[in-house]
Amino acid sequence: MPWGTKLHLTIFGESHGPAIGAVLEGLPAGEAIDIEQVLVQMARRAPGRDRSATPRKESDEPQILSGMLGSKTTGAPLCAVIANTNTHSADYDGLGTVPRPGHADYTAYLRYHGCSDVRGGGRFSGRLTAPLVFAGAVCRQILKRRGVTVGSHVLSVHSAADTPFDPVNVSAELLEALSQKYFPTVSPSAETAMRAEIESARMALDSVGGVVECAAVGLPGGFGGPLSEGVESSLSSLLFAVPACKGVEFGAGFGTTELFGSENNDPFYYDGAAVKTRTNNAGGILGGITTGMPLLFRAAFKPTPSIAREQDSVDLTAGTDTKLSVHGRHDPCIVPRAAVAVEAAASVALLDLLL
Ligand SMILES: Cc1cc2nc3c(=O)[nH]c(=O)nc-3n(C[C@H](O)[C@H](O)[C@H](O)COP(=O)(O)O)c2cc1C
Image (cartoon, protein in one colour):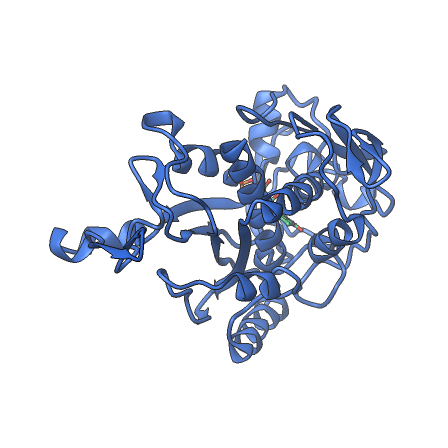
């Protein structure tokens, strides 16, 4: 089913089929798109960069089939296809009958009566974030032209943490700089500590999760709507389309429950003619509508389910308990690559809101 209200995004394909891709309908015509910058975003998400990620190497170069003429959008649906060139399908033999704990093998088996393609995780693979990142990279450039900048950093990996964004004062320059990095952190020492966590999980045949913090600045106030039309509803519906995303919180989020109203309310003041708030526990959204303050949210990612350590599973054909250790090429931590997908989801959702 396509996602969106003004923009309609369809992501198609399976991890070990010939190709995956995206169709994005509703883009304005005549928008210049810098394909080099799209490729920068695709490369940030692509696997095989370093030991914190899966060694599956793929160039992830999108082939644009429609919707662009020269460097500009035509107004027709933008369709891009990304070839699956580096598949090791034999790694997935047996997973149709012995499901990986924590992955979607078992639920896909129930939902599709054993017919779904389990190779590489099929439709549930993190690889399906590549078309999302393509769509997001296009939307990011259109947003930028409208004064909106989106960026994120890895706020934590297991117990290693980065410096959080200042909720009232996130700069577009910082977000721009982070959105060019493979392992985006505000503090360089946080990256070192996080890499150490990932490496020790890898050595222990295990995996770790973490939190991505994302912001958008330059968003005007007054966009969104109440109830299910709200910015939170729209953003989180696309964020939960990123595999392994297990939680989303806006502004002070779950932390608001530990505050008094007098602490949590963001007091208003005039900054010249503009109404601002002194704090930003609301994360830039009140009643589902943007306040004009930085939009701020966090997305939690669980540890990668496929781990080499032996775990309990079941053999669905034999009807017996069994053991499983997963081999093949899996990220010991998907969080740095998920950050790119989070920015992409935010870019698509925010452009949908502004159009
Ligand atoms: C960028 C990215 C890469 C991923 N890579 C892997 C992987 O190598 N191995 C794996 O088991 N899961 C990986 N996942 C997570 C699974 O796709 C996901 O956990 C699974 O589909 C079950 O969905 P759920 O966790 O949302 O319930 C990845 C997710 C993302 C966003």
